[in-house]
Length: 497
Image (cartoon, rainbow, N blue to C red; front, side, top):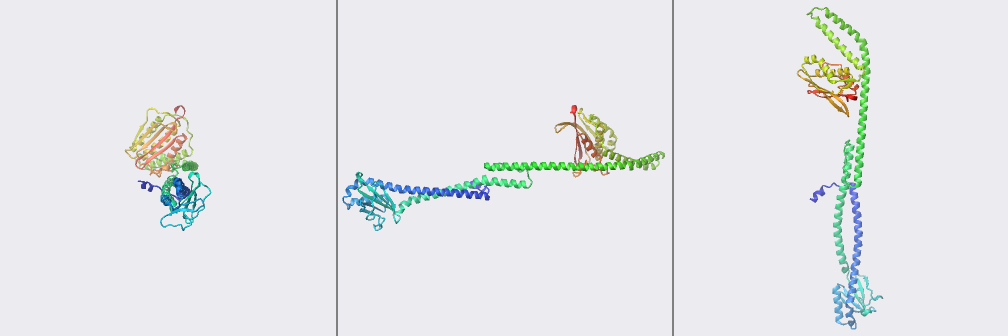
């Protein structure tokens, strides 16, 4: 279980590795210094313990050593020294008089007094009567001299000599236990450091790196969860604020681009209007008069023909085409010089019913059913009734032209709010051929037409301008083969709202 958790930790990056090594080195140095101090203190404790033991031995034998001093060759004295040597694990134990002359000594098996630091024949006594003299010998032995003071008067000197192992043995055991303990401690600390750095430093930094890469790739919605230490959380919060500002800046830039694009489209539209105005002037001057002459002459010729004359069909074609040219010229003239919209209360149901009544013959000829779906009461709108009639007439004519025989055109009206403004929504839905997706963005552009038979491409553009003049909106939804739906929203003003 633990190994699986450890395997899930992310590897340290260079910053995490440097931090891990630096902290590990600092902890190791502090641990070494501390352990060296503890080892030194333990060494002092062991030596002090030997001195205390020697002092206690001296106090224990002071009472019985006085009779034995009268006869240095007394075997009891040798036995007493041998017992002391064995009990304390010393190399030798010796008894000296106050002048430093050896009275009696016992040695470890195989040892003699030939070494100058192992119970020599003569020693230098210390001046202090109660002091324990301790020093290191030339061969690494530890020498203790303890004065024997029965009745508080110095009588002799007890000398104990210990091998180095007697001192270094406990120290080695202490050192080995410290090494094992410190190895386990450093391993545990290293594991905790690795885990802590991986979780609190490496992982948040990797999240920051991934977030920065996402921002660099344009995904400004990328955010970083503020987790980890205080500094990491502050850095993540600052990063998120930066991403939000970048997203806001991009959105502002997009809005500026949209406004610029809108201004460009409006400028192109104005240029087209100017061109249409010039064209309309030319048409009115150069085409209108000859066209009236042609139409008048054709009418006169038609009247003079007898019934059943085959030339009457040709004259009818001439008149129809002349009328078609005249209507196109009138659309162009109307588009180039739109009349200002009047502001008067208008009941939309009346306008809708009047327009559908005008198109009864057209819808019957095309075998298309026109359905009206309107509530009994609708708020009135302040608008120009003639312009609304023209706009609705264009929409219904386009719907009838796009719908096959047996199809259906539905006109709906209902109250609707847009941006906290009251108004009326009017929809014209057909079951016709629909509009291709690539044509939808240009459907309200002047001179753009989707009719197979060809058209001036001004009807929907006129509708767009009329709705805009009434501070309304017009939108289109369409799917090829499934029909189209044009939605017109007109605001209600004043008491009508």
